[in-house]
Amino acid sequence: MGIRNLVFYITDGSGHHQAALALSNAIRKESPSDDVLTMNCFHYTNPVLEKIVRKSYLNLIRTTPEVWEFLYDNHRIYRKIRQFRHLIHTYNSPVLGVLLRDYRPDMVVCTQAFPCGLLADLKRSHAYNGLLVGVLTDFASHCYWVYDEVDYYIVHHNATKAKLVNQGVDSEKILTFGIPIDPVFSSRSVDCMRLYTELNFSKESFTILLTGGGRGVGSLEKAAHIIDSIDAPVQLMVVVGTNHALYRRLCRRKWRKPVRIFGYVNNMHMLMRISSIVISKAGGLTVAEALSLQIPLIIVSPIPGQEENNSTFLTSQGCAFRVNAEEELIGEIKKIISQPSILQGVKKNMSVVSRPDAAVTFARYFMNRVSKEAAGVTDGYVST
Image (cartoon, rainbow, N blue to C red; front, top):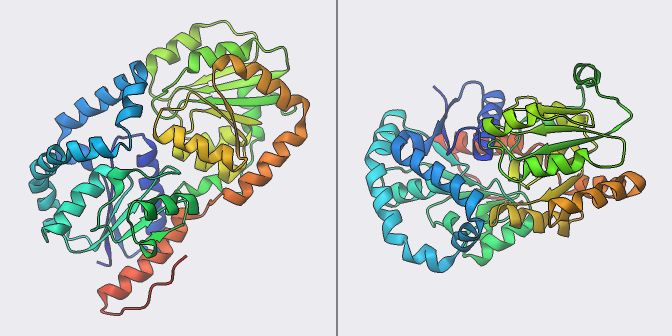
């Protein structure tokens, strides 16, 4: 067996999960002789607590998002719950320790901060001595990512790198490879004409893709109703993910415009390719995918914290439009339709920020590095 790679995420179907799959597939493609194990770390170590935390998080952002905004990247809260986090890590460490002992990974990659912190504790206690890499799937870091034991951080942009440096991370540990996405989002050989036919959509009409991520979070229903009322020739696709109740409600509605409703999809790259714009709450993976295809974004109702930070970054780079309420969508969409040059300018900006080959870049860099270290060969680090 070659190099052993353990890739951790939390929450099935999430952006963290999609990034982990992109990295795992890239490693397998670039180094077929190496082994990759991709796992939901939280579910593996504590499935009961994972279910409780996931439900609590979803309820929090749906009902009282201001509480999440207060908790997110709050250094005072971070310090106050340090003992609690230590207890959680201590409880989960024995289960994870068995996996590490049996699998003996040469590298552990974490696409979410929780497993990264858990592995950092295990490195500190010498229960794990391999390479530990944290992969950020948003455009800003937060305090729960920062551990001395992390060997490398993968970020999308120099602005993210600068924040990590301000949080005390050595700049030489930070690589600006990008947010890992599936290579289908950078392929130029995809034929979309069949999809137009299947959806009964016109290739000439202005096509809007409305999405709330894998869990269908946000004011999708309200936004869809508003878009359907626009006095303009538009057609709409709504992706509600695993939000089954919303899917049923939207399917029962009578629509004025050509509207297609989707649950959880595996062909988001196809839906994006036929879209004129994407309306989203600014989840990191959705944004990275749109950047890769240069499909302009309108951001509405981002989750406070990570998605609000993503929104700030994107608008500062001229890669997205931001509206503060669903009612503002009508004016924004009409302006975009009437002034095509606006979209062209945004697409140009997106091409500069996009990093479509992040997963492949990661695999090539680390498979080469870990192979050399396993063979006892070392070389100097070159900052990127």
